[in-house]
Image 1 (tube, rainbow, N blue to C red):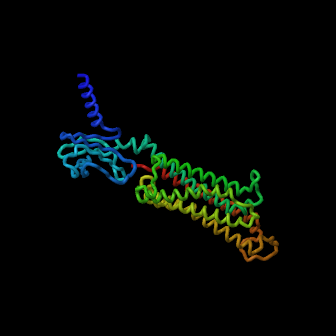
Image 2: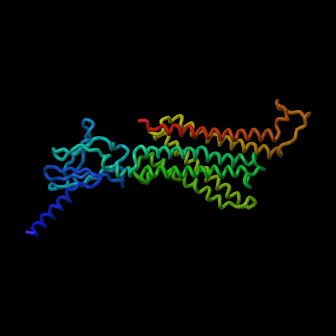
Image 3: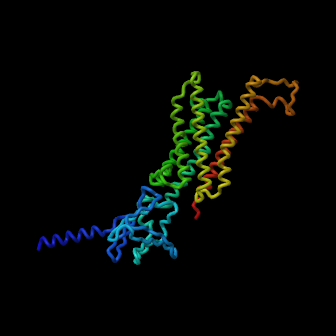
Length: 368
């Protein structure tokens, strides 16, 4: 009698264990003892796998109906379906299962997928992280990085003999700006990885085509940006014959990273309609820092070429004739430096305005 009770309890526990629905899943038991278990799979976000027949989706009165036909084995009594979510899948849509003529209760995929996909983060917090990612990238790449570039290429002549804490003013501002830019970029990367549950979205991930491009461009530009302050530690003294090699390597790395970053911003502005709702304005604002930096670089090159040709500035006598319609006394080194300084800070202000305007547009995203 004792053995019979133990055997009965053991059999009952095995039956209950077999029929118990796993966590983060939806289970449907048909009258013919066929058990269907639906769960989410986070490893591959573009496929639909199953081990019991063929699922056919059908929309009926805003309810998604999934029919399952047993095509593999006539005597199959249980099956496991793993739905792999992608950007086209609506997790909050009411859904139900049908096996033969029998239908299950209505359920929502977000109820079984959220614990896996969301990783405990609410939708609002994830959107906040996405916005923080975009805003930090915009401030880093469109304000701090261009400011560092401008003071490196344009500030040398303006603040040549001025020092701040024992170092040239232009170098201190260049170093501080690029450092803050890299901090913004790295913090932005952390935000977006947290929002995606540390899931890679670049090449080979199976994510949306433009998401892969955006992730690849952003990753490469970030790696190059982080390498800039590191390779600057290897610079040799200005008197060293190898200094030119470092200068060009530093410039090429910086320009490449900036170009890739701007391309990633263009992809986001063109394709991410939920966050970026004004593509034309966003394209224009993104192009402003680049255009101003190019104009400034050309101006510096022309001034250096003219200065080399003329042998520097010359004092002009009051009675000396000048072909210019303006008084010759205006073109003094002090006047030229004042104009250049004004232009430099004007460009920096425009970069800040462009980055701030884009940040406000992104902050107002996700309206629907």
